[in-house]
Image (tube, rainbow, N blue to C red):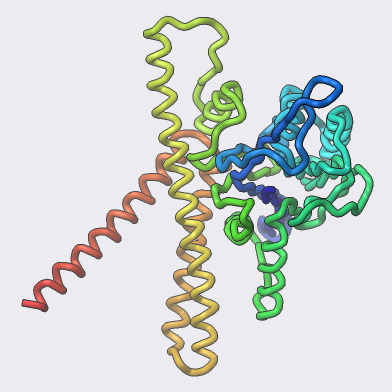
Length: 373
C-alpha cells in the first residue's frame, strides 16, 4: 500500500491597507511501492496474481508535469504507465489532467481486485486546486478494497489523502481534535511541517515508510525534492529533476558520449546530486525540530496551567517555536526559488548550526571532566 497526501495553504498578505492572499499546495508521499507478480495463464500470456508481488522501499511517487504535481496510490506499474503517458503533455487545468488520467487508466483493464487512485494539483481557473481521482471505483482501504464509488474525481477543499497510511493520519487528526489542539497552517512553513507530520504518522502502517518526498505548488510554478534513497522513475526524469532544482543545464544525453565526456558529465551530476541530498537532509531535520518544538510548547503550556513551570519557561518554549519556524521558512523559500545559491546557503547555515551544537556538547564534556577531578 502507500500514503500520499496534499494540503492547500492560504497565506494572508497585506500591502499597505490592501489585504490579499497567496495560495500554495503542499504534497507529500512515502517511498513504499509494490511490484506486481504475474503467472502464466491458461489462455497463454501472463495474468496478475491478486495480492501478489513484492514491496520496494525506494519508489518515486511524486512527479512533476510542468506546473502540475501528480501522485499515485496502488500498483506501481500502473502509476508509472500513467505518468509515462502524460509526462510530455501540457495541461491548462486540474480538470483536464484528471480527465486524462481517467482516460489513460481506462485502457489498463483493471478489475474489482485492483485499486488505483491519484492526487493531482495545479491551476484551476484563477485558483490552485487539489484533485483526487478514483481510477477503478475501489477505495484503497487498509485491508482489501471496499467499493465506495464509481470511477471519477472530485476537488478537495483543504486535504486529500490516499493509501493505507491515511487511517493513521485520520487517527492523528482526531487525537489532535480531542485534546483541544487545533490544526493550523496559516503559512507555507506550517503547511510543510503538517505534511511532514502526516508522513511520519502514516509510517506506522506496515506498508508505508518515512522516506518522504515533498512537493510545493505556488502561483508561479512547482518544485519537488526527493529523499536521498528514492530511486528515480527513469534517467530522463532524473536529469530533468536535477536541472530544474539546481537551475543549471543538465540535459539527458541523446547522443553517444566519449569516455571523457561521460566522466565529466558524471562528475557534474554527482556534485549537483550532493547538493540536492544535503538540502533535503537539512530541510527534513529542521522540519523535525520545528515539529518537536511545537509539541514541547504544548507540553509546557499544560505544566504552566498547573503552576508547575514559570511564565519565562513558557515564553522560552514559544520563542523556540518561532525560531524553528523561521528556519523552516528559509528552507521553503529556497525550495521555491530553486537554484544552487539558495540551496547551498541553506545547507551552510544548517551545517554551521550543527557545528555550534557539537562545540557546545564538547564544552559540556570538558566541564564535566574537570568537575570530576
